[in-house]
Length: 249
Image (cartoon, rainbow, N blue to C red; front, side, top):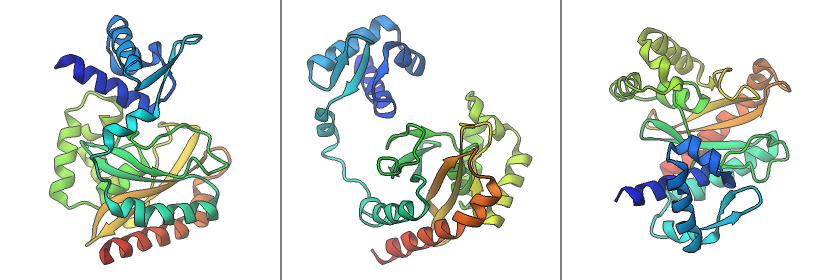
């Protein structure tokens, strides 16, 4: 059973960082190199991975798609949000993303990085990011009922991950979330992925955030003030369109 869980962990990491090396996987999974070699060899022989022996990197093959054939994505993401995010990206040029909350993290469910000419960071559908230092995480949590937000913060306060440290300062977190809710948008913490910036707004259903959408930009190219003035109205309009689409579906 443990070997199966380890293999799934490796597949998840390669979904985030396709083309990772043994060293990358060892760092991200904490699985020993000996065990990694064994797992990767098995996945390669089964056809789920292909190895580049020159640099000891591994890539997923199309066969992994069969693992998700029984899973139906929320239809509103592909049918409603997806086309609207594509339209938004054409207007702003920068990549647009949709993140949903799961297991006390924010998971990328949709991105236009594949079509944006201004994409500079590597991010994949399925990428997990922390809640309290990301724009999407902050705006999602700010638009949750108090009991739900309190539960998330209590769990994060018990986390040892450095990106969850803010949860140990409940007064500061509450002040930050109140401001985000008042503003209607959130910006990413500057210390997290400092090369880029991000602005996010909630997609509201009955007054509660279903997910969050964001625009990511090069931090040195745009000031926060410019981003708010130029892109926030477009981002909010797209969020309203997604909300309306969900309500009608």
